[in-house]
Length: 279
Length: 238
Image (cartoon, rainbow over all chains, first blue to last red):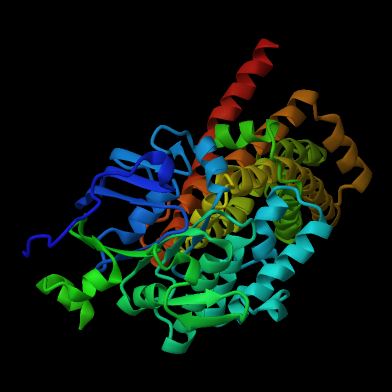
């Protein structure tokens, strides 16, 4: 096994400066530990791309960040709250502040697209005059406003992911977690999804963790930005963020962070394991 | 799980519309099989017992025995088993499918407690509809018994009804009611538990569905024995 090439910033940032912090997080199942001391933090507005082979614990990390799973050991802070000691009822309240985009969309198949997107607002008892325009707005954002009365089974895989993104952002959460949002999609549809994630980052400034095994998704997020004025995707970082890299790569291997750094640093790395991602 | 589903009913959020939907599914949806089976069980009871009573010239007692058997035993048990077969499996497969397609996780991720949203409406719906279905089943069973006694035993409909109603005491009605409540609780919680315990994808959903029917049916029969014993004990004491 190659030795880890570089783990900068391994020391935790002050909690107040980070939106999500993992501190020596361990979790395992019958087959043994999956995450073995995962430590990282995400600053506000930053997108962390979790890269790794299947089974390295990317989805587990996201579910722990959302409080859907509790770590066996270690601490997780998100939005200034320590998730480790929270009861399920407290975690339910916490989760209302985050958006989660599941790998296959996880749309409620007995509800229409509009009802799926409106779910959280309806749960909060929002009146109809608030729900309908909000649903139309987020469906317009993902360019699917014509699907409001359709059932998820009538949509393509890419459309379901876009509805899932719309559902996650209906309450404008400060954190959005993406679990392999482009897995199994064709390149054009994948590009549509990545553009949506770019828009969410650059228009709403959300902090994001994105689990993926597609390096090109990470590079797309790092090398492009969405210009709200022209409503187009442009190469390079946005002018106001040029000095502040907002996309970082975390490569997971054997339940630990093998590499943490910018896309450029990953490209320059001579490490043989990282090179396998670049081929 | 049963306790949590019931305690959820006393604190918000409550899901009234979901409960009504489940009552429609469990109650209205089960009505045809309950009506059909209830009628023929009442009729066959008369055919079986009437032949014995004819030997002693006591055909008029047929109404008594059919009424007692239906109210105390056959009505709640057969209804419980039929609804378990139809709805416990349905609940398990629906919740199991939601679990394997991450819909339950999505629900939790959006701040909804699946126990409140999925279990409590189903348990409450079963607690309301199974006693109602049992009542309907008993009534239709008596109608079936009456039809069979009129055409097979040449007993008058009036005599049958008079005897069937006169023999019943409050304790008999309570016995049937409590049994149907317990059976409703069993079939709904077993369905929810099996559905939300699915492991192994779609194959697991199939297993959970089968398990839900088997476990709830066996539990209903076992519970019936203990409830009958308890009812007889209480009837002696009171």
